Amino acid sequence: MRHVLTIAWKDLRSELRTKESINAAAAFSMVILVLFSFVLDISGDAREFGGGLLWLVFAFAGALVLNRSFAREQSNDCLDALVASPLPGWALFLGKALANFALLAVVELIALPVFGILFNADWLRFPGWIALTCALATWGMTVIGTMFSALTVNLRLRELMLPVLVYPMLIPVLMAAMQLTSALLSGTGITGDDWVWVKLLIGFDIIFTSLSLALIDVILVN
Amino acid sequence: MSGAALDVRAVWKYFGDFPALRAVTLGVAPGECLAMLGRNGAGKTTLLKILAGLSTVSQGSVSVFGSEGHSSGARRKTGVLGHGIGIYDELSARENLELFGTLYGVANPGQTALDWLERVGLNHVAHARAREFSRGMRQRLAVARAFLHAPDLLLLDEPFTALDDRSIALLQRLLAERLAAGATVVMSTHQLREAMELATHWALLVRGKLVHKGERTPEILADPAWVYRNYGEDS
Image 1 (cartoon, each protein chain N blue to C red):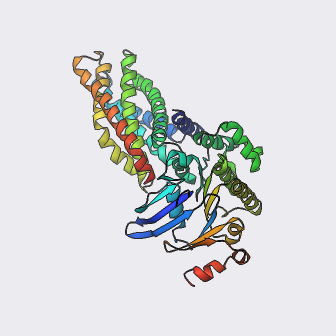
Image 2: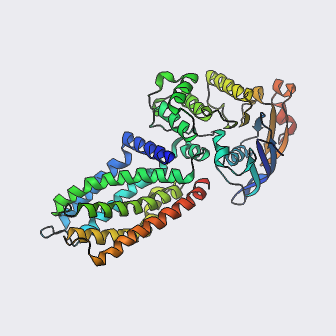
């Protein structure tokens, strides 16, 4: 666990000093939300499109954060230095995923109030459920994004390849997050039918976290 | 070879259809300092990457300190300095060394980092970010990173390249210290004279094949180019 935290600390410290991806992701999400506020009818409530809009913004902004995850290791061949060290592959993966999760959470925390103001959405009615939905869906995005960031790190067109590979994989997690967020924004909360989406998010997170941990060593050495 | 620090058996490495290494068999005993020679593209870096666990073999086997593959224990005993310096530009010199000290399980990473910064003459810039360093300073920081956990095996890929006289002398002194402590060193190099001063053995790769491995003799030290004249592609 110490190694996981060491890698997460290293990534977060590097990011806080350069602010390369967090600034880009936060600015991107603001711009998209403002642009959509011009286009969409916000005279009613946000329940019909709120969930979909929010998670599309998070997914696109997330790609900016996730693209940098392993690309950060490329300068000076830092990834080689990490792989040659006794650091287990799973610890490297979890450390990076943890750092990415924290960065995505910051972007979401910035975007949610702006979304609430622009679209007249009361996202604070079920704060616990909103937090749980964001946590589960963000972890799903993080795990898939971190894994594919490792896979595409040596590709010339990695900035292009990462979204192309990641978004199809994220369809289940985005669908579940959109459904749950829309239900929460509509004020009904999580009812019996919505539990299937919660279970889907939990299952997705468990399956893809396990798969990533099992495959990361093969990806890193090859 | 029992008790070998490194045991490479019939290793082939293909990139597509191209064989970068062809049936390389090599044993390196504990305490040996092996200078791995060869022209550009001979396979030196490929072999070192395999020894460091950064690349897999296509055929054959590699064992490090008796364990097949690259166990966590073997990695803990190994220091690697490759073409890239493995230093984070956005972290300070001290933070870089502390990070790797922690990963290698060094007892007191903070103090060890400071000690090594002093040894490589970077203590006055301990808190400056690595991106602000000159090339020579970055190289010295990379040397400290590779040595700070007192490795029993050092794998160095062209370690003297881009170093000034002072840094070459520093690296030679540090290598001599590790060798005196019983460590094993494998280094690829084009700087024959600097390498041969430390080497106990030398090996020559020609187009992926190991064509010779033997002891470094006083004659070679006096005239390192003799190696290529007698065993190289033009011999």
